[in-house]
Length: 462
Image (cartoon, rainbow, N blue to C red; front, top):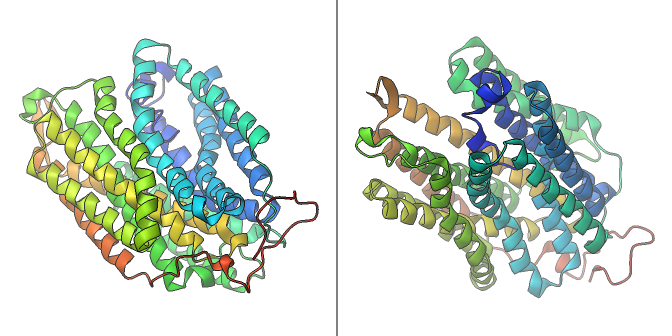
């Protein structure tokens, strides 16, 4: 759902009769709604049942796809993509269910694979969407995602039982509204800064509003009896530094996808571009998705042997090494694929370790909301990466065929920037206090909250 509209964006103005700026909201709307709904639905899952909220998230995603399949009106398409943003909450909710249902010896590998699906889906979704767009009617792409979403809802209803672990209390509506307003201002400024101008009144005003609203929201959260986000818990070094590392890892990872797609499609007249089609571009990213799928169990083994913070630091260092490969040679296709694959290896290690760090640092009844915040920070990092890469490439262009095209030097600077951020992420990971190798709820003094009528056989407190 993150990458499925990317191959379609160049043709959407012609297909819908809308401007390129309006069409870009097909991506922006999903980013904004996903950022807002991820922590909100995570908190709702902790309070009202993770299976129930998971099905609601998948249902919203499916409804958005169905709407996209039935219309060519750009306003309806943008609204539908806003609904599809709920898909971002699926991973943290699923990780929380795995924690509640699986024994400790199976939990690590399952959580690692679940976390890696974010990158796997992005890497596999792009070539699939490109093939559909090139050879079929563009609505077919949304018919496919509608079918996948409906299958997801059906399978969850059939196979997943409701978790007995709940955190009772009243839902924090003021906190939800405050977080939504602050995130929309922040991410709207980040995502539209390049188009509107970073010094424009709109962008500066959005950033100022984000700072003011989020400051007021933080004050409210610290005083709320049942806050949407437990900022005191997030302020603990084990949790807070994990969130910082997630932000930086999201930034470092996303540059790989952005830059690779643009670089290999650049015209051959640039001297470095390969002039590949969008389908061939998607196939270049396919090895990354396969590697992420195969290596997630390896990440779990490293975390079990050395601890997830070591896995996270190693993953960030491997991401930096991948960008070093990209800087060394970004002209030969095999070197481009090799460098992108090394970045994917590092991303697998880092993304698989992050939820394990959270699981070991927060109570069971706050798992979904804490992982939702962690995924939110990855999303903010990706948005920041997109804006930063765009800013670098815009300032390093040369005319090719009468149109400005990014130079190879601009791409190399983007690689260097992402690699440097990855090294900072590795340093942040090493600063995380050592863990005990078990969840905080595994100790004898912790008990999980069970709701009345919870099914027998589900995990209970020690």
